[in-house]
Image 1 (cartoon, one colour):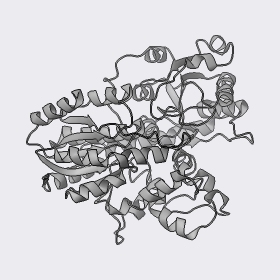
Image 2 (image 1 turned 120 degrees about the vertical axis):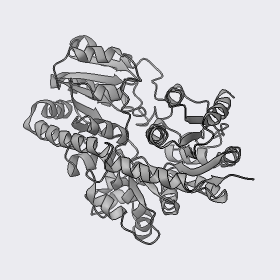
Image 3 (image 1 turned 90 degrees about the vertical axis):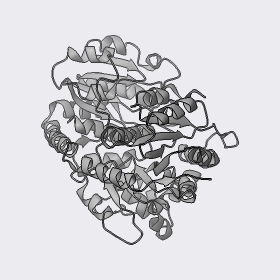
Length: 482
């Protein structure tokens, strides 16, 4: 009720602004990129934005913290929770997200009709395409905000054809998959949902991918200089292909909003570029055995490190996807004596750290990341080279992009037992932080940082494309009626 009251109040404060409605599917990795896009629309183009959020549970602390920090022209409402209790306990993330959206469509329609003002555009992410039908029924232009790379978008656009032409599992293909303008990708590195074509996760991913071309436009959080080949191909005016707007890199640049944190004071005391930041994102978790190998590898590397530690999970790699918090004390799972042996050289923090502030700190010289696209972009705008350690979703494809194409990352080898071993971890971290290889990656990343700064400047391509969209939306409003 509090959020519904806030929605009414905030929209009354901005009654004349054209309204853009955004619907992120569940997960912080979908909410945060859309908030960054929304902030630019309201701060620079006098638009209002309302987030309508489908859910199967009360909102998490992480969600409400992000939403309450937004400018006053951005309001939000959580739709009534739907139930997923009829689903098997081993249902994968993609069906859970997709069904949360699908079962929320009646509430979404009611919410859209409740606005007395004008709705000028409706924006969803890749798992929200079923909401296109509601927007279309209400005569609202609808757009896809793609929160990953042009390479992954190219794969999604290609997938319906690939599904028709390939009979085997993609992992069994003798040749890598080639998308126009992209480096080849082996089947084992394709997005997680397509690794088992008999699973509902695959069917849902294929379903959404096949609906992308219905959108009035695709807003892409990447940029021409990072993925020139893929974006050039995506922007070709082929029949049935929506226009693509590469507005990236949109990341959180407000370093003041998260306040102080103990890790920042600790970083203040370290030499410039001497610390590797280790973080697997809001959703990523390691197995107990892998956590042990990582701890020992960091110790053996003899490098300074800041590690956001989460409790291990031996079943799935995205156990924290919907919560972002560890349920147990993660330090209890570290090797005996590890904290004492690495005291002064290593700092462990539980579950969360202010990543944007950490990556912008001068002491950070490298980032061991799960390769979530938000994290890669945040590293890029700060010029920090990477160790690419993908866990789930599209992260293996992101790892291919940054290690084989853009060449700003080292990717550790996974052993036959499915683990990245301690010696491999120590070697890769040392190569990144000390070796000539690391220096080359650092130089390449610094060049991309400079390019990104120009793109995000007043006359940059990101600024201009967002301005183009804002002008289009201001000139094409639709009054909602029953």
